[in-house]
Length: 77
Image 1 (cartoon, rainbow, N blue to C red):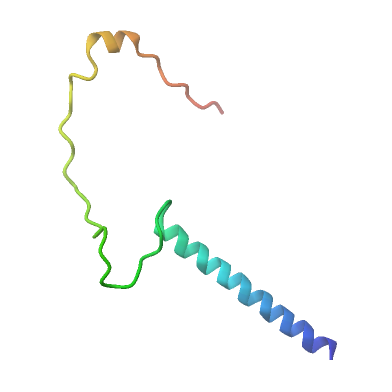
Image 2: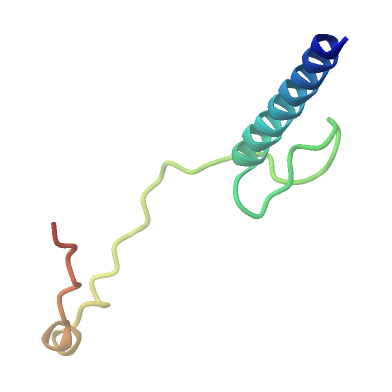
């Protein structure tokens, strides 16, 4: 009789682990701050992306900004 309960508990734990893993995968695919995709027909982001690079703005790095620039710290080791 004790072996039967052990199998039931083991199966229940396995189901919970699988559910947690699936929930984690769904949350990770949704990305930070986003909810998982809703039912079809909902309004919202269509997922379009742009492949056009922005036009460079050379006026940002003027001589004054360049002279006061400090190199970013680099990781060691």
